[in-house]
Image (cartoon, rainbow, N blue to C red; front, side, top):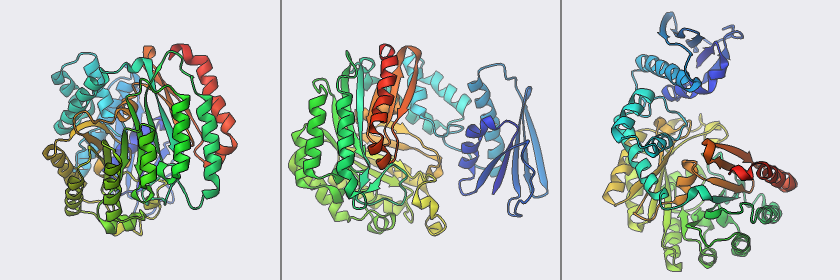
Length: 492
């Protein structure tokens, strides 16, 4: 256990993720200096890190057992708060690196979209050389991570030049039901079996919300539509048909560049559902095994077989789907590089148009975190090696990286990368990750993001996460966004 004592707790969200990245297996508690007594600490908790934010600089004291070490870094809080925070984080990083003997590939960047930083610099006309030096000096990123960020941001810039994203908007529609809840999952998802009585009511509320926002952006063109979850294909073919038909009826699809449905779990995919998706013009789907190791699927609560993954993929091809993505997760309990190599070999045989590689991020709400002692002998290991395997696999199979994002609590402090064949990139993924376009989110747990391009800022308007609350409070959810748009529509 590590006690972190801050003279100004306003910096907790900056300090905690960085310390956690160095001490991923440790319990970390953050205290305000004026409230911390140090009493009743267990003997095992012999590591204290105190950070004093002073007018002339930062003082960091590390105490481990009977050893105490204090360092001071002088700088004035005369620049922007962002510059001050980054200077503080660089100093803390250097201190933690010296203590642990470790470095982090992304430096002081934690829970941030690194390609967005690079994208903005490229947009300003900065050279790759200047961006490299900036990322190295400001954020302490490794050469490898800077290179991949520049590569992806450059590709995104070229792709977005082809669309008028400023005069467009995209739609996210959430279906928060799944056949079962995976061990690592903390998203808004509900067992379709347990919530069977609510699915019809949920769809009624969702369709009301969809109708309410038809024509909500006069003068703007719809760019992309993404149906996610949860697992949208937990709905019946009839329910999917009704929902997609309504969406196509309520919104003008004449300028839509991408209509994507996260088909997701293979145990929920059937021929009639795939045919419904084709009927309504869905041109990108995702079939997500997460792993092609049966023992892993059994452990994490995905109640399907490897054979079902292959059958669902083959069925999608038979029906006519020509743009299929597959997701895998690195760092799942008990897996090693040999398992990942086998998973990639099986995916190679299926030959999807795109592959999204996630690094396990276990959030507090996930059962894998709540039950971590039970699975302590199956912690993620060698995740960096696994990521290298996927990078090489992508190169060997003509997949190009086109988007990247990071999350807190990721295994080995790494990242998620989306790869695709040329021309098969997931447009919605780029738009939402780079926050370049307004996203209207409909459904439980939906987070609408409204982009104000002139001011280079965005505002969020969220829906409640609970299915029952969403059903009961649907009029309130509609009013939230309606009221926001009424005030801000001219600026969007």
